[in-house]
Image (cartoon, rainbow, N blue to C red; front, side, top):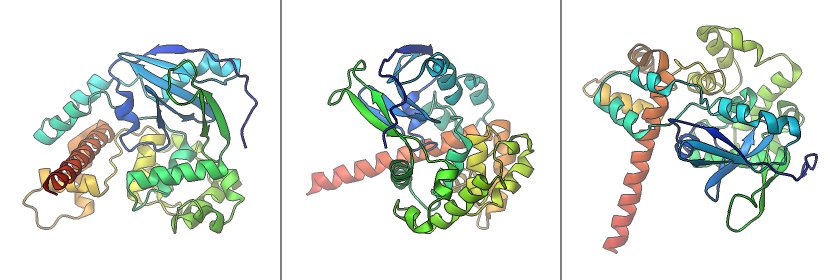
Length: 319
């Protein structure tokens, strides 16, 4: 159902965003619901529908229907969401000085760690297990369209060809999902993860789990609490710690990162388990290991995609 609470009037706002790459940040596998629209992107930050476009060191914000309080707060909300206050130069300077990290740092210049809503981040990554980015995006879209709230974004002042407006959907609350059945969730292509998502939603909805209260926990205790949730292992816990709790030391190790670590840091190692890789990553990449991981991940994935496109083009030329 379309939410029509907000007035139609729109005001375009600009904010400074130095040392920031919007497109790279949104396409780096942190968040999965933003869509391209003209020269910018449309999506939601919590329950707010947002259009954002980058022009050099400026972000252009629009697409309202926001009530006056949200309109005034929008620059602060967007700047917080995209972590524009992170001292990116200092963070990158703290990375280890080695060939693979230097290449990733150069390639990913301007990529920032997004501060995501906690429930949205947790639920999305529970659904991400054993899935590629494209599949996670499909699941996120299906959950939003089936259980979220539809909101209209006005594109008329942003020169977006083909439409004057579009509809975006909020991520469904834990309360909304908790009232449904596993069968209903499976209709969103969640698969076996539906049971985990439903169980966790019910824990959060009942108050047995308070994600906001966990903010004060140490990294060790926070990881332990997250790993006790249905469907959450070390990798997902570290993703949630990094993207929802701003624990910048957290270093998620998925198949891509494991491949990078093995190939570039342990090329001759015959016996190398996940515990050893985790110990190495925590000591080698330091207090901003989460940023280092995201740069390594996006660089590796981008190179693989480019290589796949090149192979596809080569096959077409040979036909």
